[in-house]
Length: 89
Image (cartoon, rainbow, N blue to C red; front, side, top):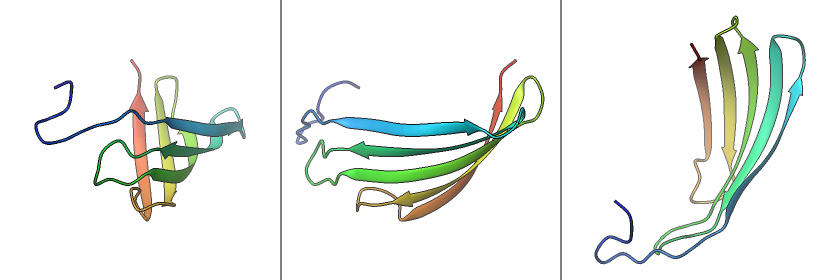
């Protein structure tokens, strides 16, 4: 649903991501990205988080990625870990 729900006021905010990627080998890559966003509603908090990851190609159509995450604001998780599986037929 687009717009602001009843009783809630949203404002425009800036957000962005800055990152880099290094191809360590033909099948393995390493990367990091930093995400930041402003508060868009009250009560709310800005978000700032850093994610570091490693990707491993499992063949032509599949990739496995593991990451760790560190938050730097109250609106972001304190820390996190994750595993993602990509498959493109």
